[in-house]
Amino acid sequence: MSAETPAISLQDLGRDYGDRAALDGVEVELPPGRTLAVLGPNGSGKTTLLRVLAGLLRPSRGRAAVLGCELPGEVWRLRGRVGYLAHEPLLYRDLSARENLRLAARLHGIDRADAADRVERLLEAVAMSERGDDRVAELSAGMAQRVAACRAILHEPELLLLDEPDAHLDADGSRLVGALINGGNGRTRVLVSHDRERALADADLVLEL
Image (cartoon, rainbow, N blue to C red; front, side, top):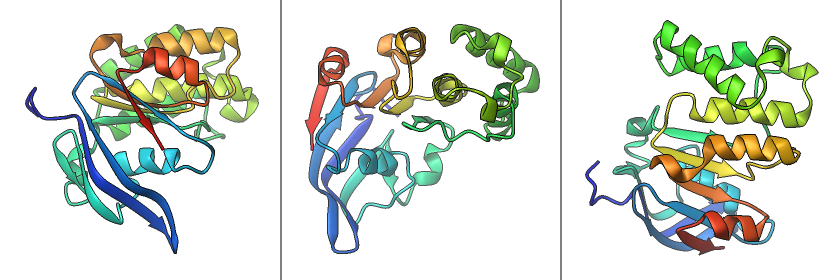
């Protein structure tokens, strides 16, 4: 993707669930390396938009291009280039934190030695090294969210999709995860947050739904 190509380009984007339009007429262009804050009330389509950008949902109409890939036809080209942190951790509860991250590394084709180093660095960054061998089912919701944040950036994605990244986190967890997912490394981000003040502080562009 060239520097002139928008990281995200949406034109008259719509997504329907049956007779209900979850998204309608969404327009945005986000340059690479910038942060887009997506704001709106519950039910306005914020999570639906993230799922479309991740290639998990097909648009019902309009145009969507992500990292130079036209969706849905070129969704395969996005594989490994997008990280997604949902407001629920979505980890394998019967695996430990380390096992979840090692599995994610294998799925992304990361070399085993490199993966082991990344996993340990990330767990340390969110103060989860000592709990890394505990099953996710034994962790608090906040601890699981810390591990989910590690998984979202484990493969060093170009685009990071963040759906209420502070969900379940206390002040320390929010600080640690925030340092991990911040936009200071040139990564493009889309941030959905109920904390309007925080989202606006982080944003280069704002999309109201």
